[in-house]
Image (cartoon, rainbow over all chains, first blue to last red; front, side, top):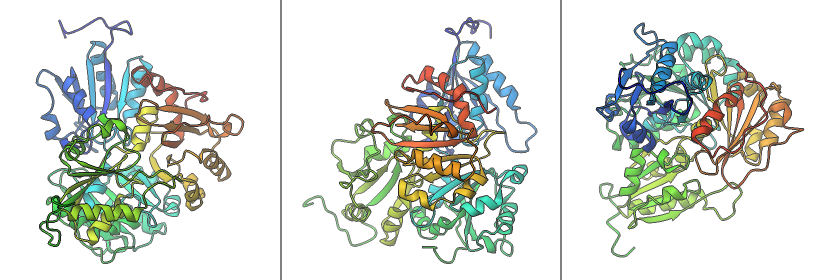
Length: 275
Length: 275
């Protein structure tokens, strides 16, 4: 970085890192703060969940690093390299925006990066974003909480190897709405475990893919129907799985939302609302 | 509404309602979509959690209805009246923005209002916002999930009468991070119930008041310390209570965030990080 490097030893001349939630993908669901920081950034380090529409907001003079990680993708950048990149850029005196899909503190590894920066006395801030679960719920028409139906909402890691760590008995006993992140290849496994641990087969399960994006798709069933009527294969976008009594409300809420969001492709399978 | 009323019987000439999350209060944490909708609205119906800074974005020609509800406040507008107001305004052909603090589908009663509109065939959309829990976590420096520490996050209704409905054994058994909404007057009751149901007294508990706003305050303890060293009385702002193993990270993350957010007033009590 000849010419671009400033003194890096002292605290006062170090740059800083803004760890920023970009929201679920629709550029209009970025916060005003995220857009302001992106447009003023010297360097942007972004992951695979940051959409093309959002990348189009990046200023031309800005250094851009794509460290996209997809579950199981061998080409992704290891977390240690991302941490080191943030430190290196900040020590060049740059204002770095670490842009993450959704919210940085909900399955975003924002905490790991922030700790790495804190230990090296590099100033940082956390800027919250619209979480993937809020976007999926809004797009599908599923209230995450709903008076009389669901009084709690739990977000869990739905990626295959992490399913073993979930205390399924306790989860089922606690009730409310369950949202599984990174659950694209785990739908059947999640449904099977919930049923095996006593979840009501009449509970609704919805898969929401590419929430807020043009390819958004929603598919729903009752838990007990999935075995004989599997949920359809998913496309290339990220997916969340939502299970709970308020999933049934999408039968009433999604067709109406669909009147304004024509990209909700398919909703099927729920025969009665749980109200 | 002489002169302003359009034909209201047919579906085609009815207005519509955008149920919009305004985020936690900082106007910069509104989404671009929320700002666009607010600035184009014919009528705005907002609650008490919408900040003065956000109200300053309302267009001058717009009808504004404050239906603010605070827990226990007798002067708040009953939900049935809010529902009826939305219908009446939409049937005047207006584009109504129903603006809610945080996200409409996380303890926002957005589902109830959407159902009421759906049943009357009034077009609506749900626009997600930055949830209060994401803002509180970012402001306090508490990752809601953190690899190796917390693999799940549960949002619960922390308002007094709702504590009886929480299945505390299952919640404690499930683990992860617990976020209690509307918990301002329930901190001691929540801590006592968690301990009575076997929660580890070494777990951190943080109270985050007025997240993202100028008066933001954060106070933290270990669960087992609250009885002999009570959390300080809170001010007038909304408060969330966060409990879990990743609360301890604020000891590392909050002082640094404080370098950029000078309004984080006080953090105390946690002696060791749980890493």
